[in-house]
Image 1 (cartoon, rainbow, N blue to C red):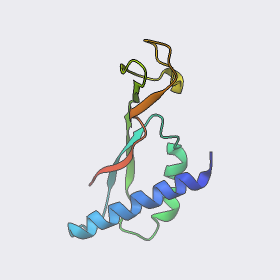
Image 2 (cartoon, rainbow, N blue to C red; image 1 turned 30 degrees about the vertical axis):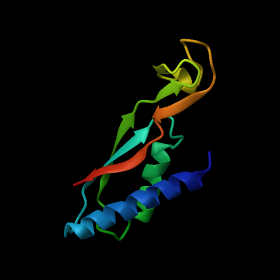
Image 3 (cartoon, rainbow, N blue to C red; image 1 turned 90 degrees about the vertical axis):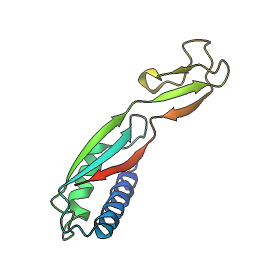
Image 4 (cartoon, rainbow, N blue to C red; image 1 turned 180 degrees about the horizontal axis):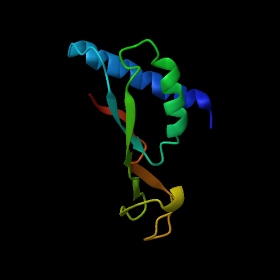
Length: 114
């Protein structure tokens, strides 16, 4: 895993949070609610670590990050049934196929700020 990915994710959340705060005339951000997919391949601890560094001196510096895990769901491309990929394995338990479309679980979005 590349640490740059988590740094870019943290920067993206900071930019969105500061933009929303500016639009609503907020002077301090205390909490950020973030949805993160279980197969998003992002390390929450690294995002938190980068957050502490990049938010210094901004109105988001005191903000706590609260993550909500989005459970993965995929749809088999052979039988079209949906399932949860166990252990990240994209292998249909219904028909045995390996091809699937990801429906949920790759998200990384800012849901709300306080």
